[in-house]
Length: 215
Length: 132
Image (cartoon, rainbow over all chains, first blue to last red; front, side, top):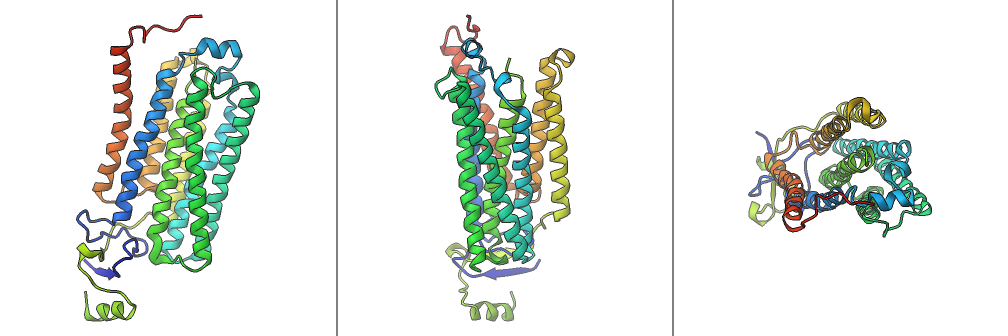
């Protein structure tokens, strides 16, 4: 087995194209392990909101029916499917950015990072548009049990996407300054883990809230 | 590590210190998938999403609401596993990361069932559907 040593204090540095096994107690870099621990806690975080939605689901049916705000009626499935498609594609561009930095192709890295941020921005814009429409139709944060559970869950997801966009833009800026090279591929990988997590949370939210029939 | 490698590292300003003090020894690991494989996974994800949306439009009387829900959840689970395995590299990464993630992944549905059980036990009319 070949081995290489990288300088101390640069623990997130990793060789291109491989999962390096760091000489730590766990055999993996602390930053990456911390990110996975964070994502694990995020599973519980979103799990709590999805659980709340499922537990309250249908218990305010009368209120929603009277207001003409049944989810089956107000959801625009073709529109939300398009935004879900965009978020799925952003996961592809994110992983292509990682592949690009690992083969030292900085131009491609910037293209894919920018594409991912742009897809994320499109998703957020679509969410703002959707929220605005729902609000105009009368669905408020205080409408029954559906209003708060829907807005809080999807809004928190949107907040995570927004954080991800800023993270991507920061990587893009570092790349422009020449401060992001193949030896820093783990920095892109860590951002990618966060971005993919945001994507898988949406996979669950999209199915549970939008596609599964409410009534 | 050869003397040449040590010399190169020291010339580059790197300090060789024990692992406990922060040095990272990197060994050959599992290679990431090729970009072509990433694109292939994306195509599969898009196809599954299209099927999901189509299934959500099927008349509930035709298949039954429960079957539709099961189909949708299974497809979402497949998409979830594909992204986590291929894009997040859990398929090829160290097992400890899978274990870390599984804690949260299993914890979330456990949390749901604990709340449902608690509501059933503590709230008398929890299972009574709300009337008009």
